[in-house]
Amino acid sequence: MTTLTDSLQLSAYFEVQAALNKYIEGIRTGDVALLRSVFDENARLHGTIMGNEVNGPLDVFLKDVAGNPPPVKSGEPFRAAIVDIHVNGNTARGTVIEQSYFGLNFMDHFHLLKTARGWVIVDKLFYHEPPAK
Image 1 (tube, rainbow, N blue to C red):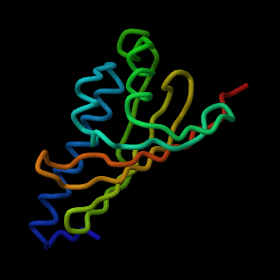
Image 2: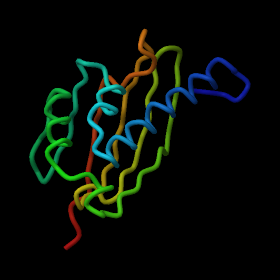
Image 3: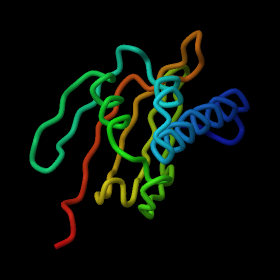
């Protein structure tokens, strides 16, 4: 767990936070290149959407993002927040809550690894609340 007295871990904490903020901005704007920059090329995504299990590679996710109007263009009241970050050496995990992304609210759990490219997401596990009726 990151402590305020560990300056190396604190620096890593802010780097992980920056990577997760890039993810949020990429989702908000539909910027596939920005999203690709924060993911490892072999990243996997796991979760359930509308009762359908998702377990796939990064490219499937990016095609979905590219194929839909992003919140910044659709006017959807999207917002997101990083609610948790833990850093242990060159590994980290973070949690992001997304509200109103294509009408759904998501809880995203990310695993990140520090590589030659910096901190990259190697795995995304997500859950969404069913749409309001």
